[in-house]
Image (cartoon, rainbow, N blue to C red; front, side, top):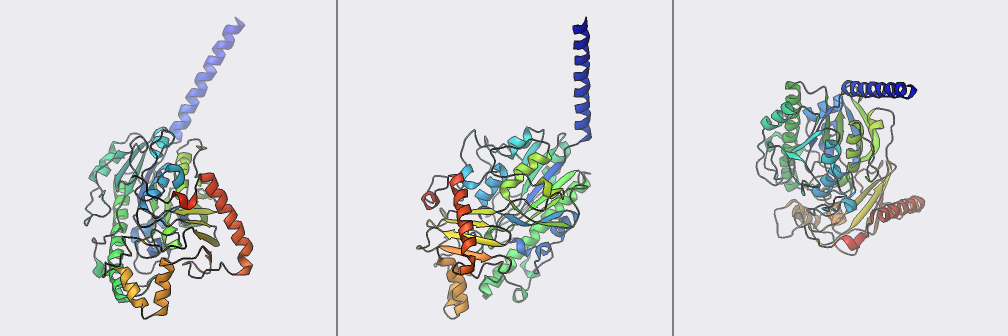
Length: 461
């Protein structure tokens, strides 16, 4: 009889606990997540990041509603590796997409946000640019029509009808990636006449030529188009009563297809933008100097959805930063560049903290070359306008030559020299810091299985 009474009590207690857990889950409703990602954005052009050439009204409005990250860093400044890292939480050598247009490893060991959030009850979908969505076994996204998938398309017609239907039909919480192709080249959409070329403020690492200024007006027109898309997405959420319970994440991807930007490990390529709006959780109009990398985004999504940390990931959750409990996340951000198929092998590695940065050019005896940008046969290109001006101007020659011919090591004070124009590697007072960074970088490469220049060779896509 005693045993029977005990069993009855235990059974009732178990039922009560399960009922209590169900109530807690209902009370703690998982938020929807919408991630809007740019394509080749010079994040320094956003007015909320200090840009002076245009007012990005809708992106700025998100910054007013949420938290702006001032040190969000791409580990590799090109589209496919950045997106693969965003989706998997792994660094490029670990997921396999360590060269542009090289697929991730097709392995049961590699999972992505579709698996992690799907297991937590989310409906995970993507619309727009579809780089890093194959194989399906690694990227089980539900694909939604609406945004242009081809980043080199000359038009950018988009519709939010299917996106809105997806939102309305989702009974479960959803995570939707909206992947814009703006402002990826060719810069053929928007209205360049909005910008007066002669009045534009150019980045200090550019050579000032008429061709550069003309192309910059076209580029900024696509930044304007991107900003409009952000506004349209926010309006759709509001019109459907979803804005308050939806976390909105804006991401800038890597830098622009101007010389010294994309396809480099300088800040103009690696430094990105991230704004996160989360009602009643993230302080409005806040900003953080915490170092975050794209690999940290999936672990954070898992964390905010109520999941347990995934130990094998390279990234880690920055949820405590979002909630204002911490003002620091990483000690260092790391970078990798492998040049193939964009040009001859030219491997680069980097490490930085909030103040200093070290770059190692592992084939410094060779010339750096990007086929899309530096082809001498393209006489009317921005690059060739720099080269021609360099024939008469020492300053112009210095600016374009620093891209083409690089030293073994580069070391910069990012606070004093954010555009990395003054290499301090030969300054004796920085010797200890350089040694420290060099040691940390080698440790990271060893942990990744990164063999440096040996892996910058042609791979099948």
